Image (cartoon, rainbow, N blue to C red; front, side, top):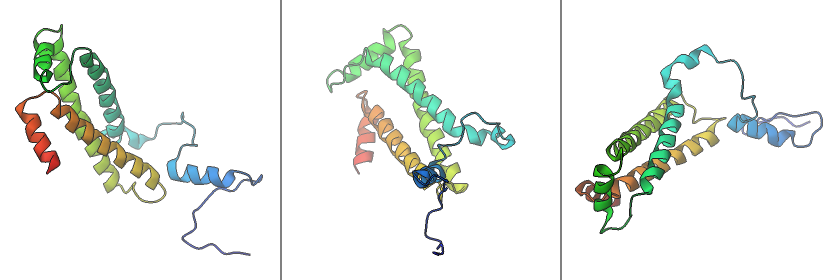
Length: 168
């Protein structure tokens, strides 16, 4: 009989043998095998538990406004500023559209950062959720990269500062 050491992963064993070990490992690392509709715990009424969902909502708004603005925007160095100005001045609700896009970008980056900090201080980066932490860190990296890319697009003075800051 073999004794367990502390370095072996804890997995669920099923009577059939089969894929129970793999399913248990995935479940313990990601929590994806739990039922989606279950009672809401009382602690989830705290707004700090909503930061991830609010970040996703800001991302969806970014996608919608970005696709609408993409219909009018020409991404070339010579016409970037002119098309941004055209959207802002001539497109119906263009100023509103750009403002929503700008402020939800700020909100998304802020909410994603706050969600990551909350997760770090609550220690969700430790076992057994380290895979979800890596996914979250890649999410933060992609949000910051897209935020920097969006800042560099319109062809103003601030993108030049963002490019020099980002390149070192």
